[in-house]
Length: 128
Image (cartoon, rainbow, N blue to C red):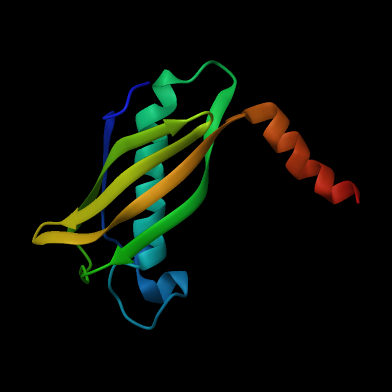
């Protein structure tokens, strides 16, 4: 894994990805939570092939803006670039676009974790 590693994911804006459907607003346009999920997916998938077996990344921080609305039926995509590696912390630049231009941008942090241990710690909360 190296600084500059790039990722890209895309999706079609459907009613299930609207602000109305996701509860983040009353309008039928691409929801901010859907854009954020696409940003996280893009960053995670870009580094996944470079991780040791049994490891994955988890999102820990986002600082993004949603700059423009996208209607139903339009394609959106996200590009990510790995900016920094600091131990297990990975920092990405993320940008989202629709067919007319940029709709959002910011930074995203992920941490590399051992998947089985991470899930076990989460499940342990049920025992308290």
